[in-house]
Amino acid sequence: DVKVTQSSRYLVKRTGEKVFLECVQDMDHENMFWYRQDPGLGLRLIYFSYDVKMKEKGDIPEGYSVSREKKERFSLILESASTNQTSMYLCASRMSGQKGEQYFGPGTRLTVT
Amino acid sequence: AQTVTQSQPEMSVQEAETVTLSCTYDTSESNYYLFWYKQPPSRQMILVIRQEAYKQQNATENRFSVNFQKAAKSFSLKISDSQLGDTAMYFCAFKLTQGGSEKLVFGKGTKLTVNP
Image (cartoon, rainbow over all chains, first blue to last red; front, top):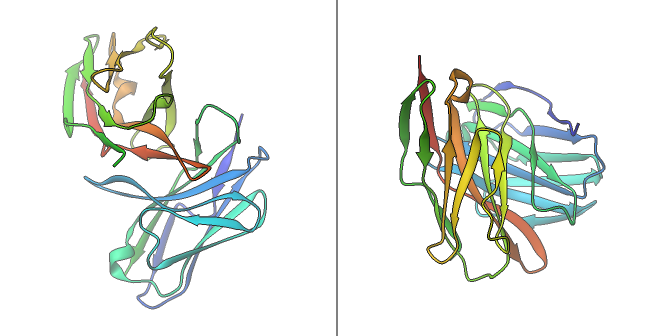
């Protein structure tokens, strides 16, 4: 079974802090994704990566950056956390050439105070 | 614009009954994939069912089936013999290919509650 893990289930940070959210997958997938999930808005894509050191902006990249130094790990970085970044963050991965199915991590609920 | 619309923010159904969740999408592509994902309360999102647009036959997975109407761009999910464990957020998604990369576009979700 594909396993996607995220470093924390719950995280509380202060405004202005630099925040790292880590995601690791164990199935050698090329593609990895970061979403944020907010009530009534569904899932919105922040960034994705289709290979090591490669990244592309999603629909809402402002205020975020990412890092993919190793194939199995995809990090989301909030350079200076703000209260409007309080949300649930979901990581996903997918093998290239598959029929689009993405495998999701359990999510990190981030609260910025 | 490539969009996915779920018109029912919330639905409820009695245990053992059948419920249908609606989804419409907009795309100019001719070959694509559609998905229904399920997110139980405080649990991981998992794939429920997948439909390939070039296949006319509707996909089925045990109690879950879809009604795929390509011309109408409609992709509804039918859950038969609903169980308490079906209580979850359900997201319809469409695979978008853009500039050589692929990503999923999600609807806003339907919260389904199965009542005993």
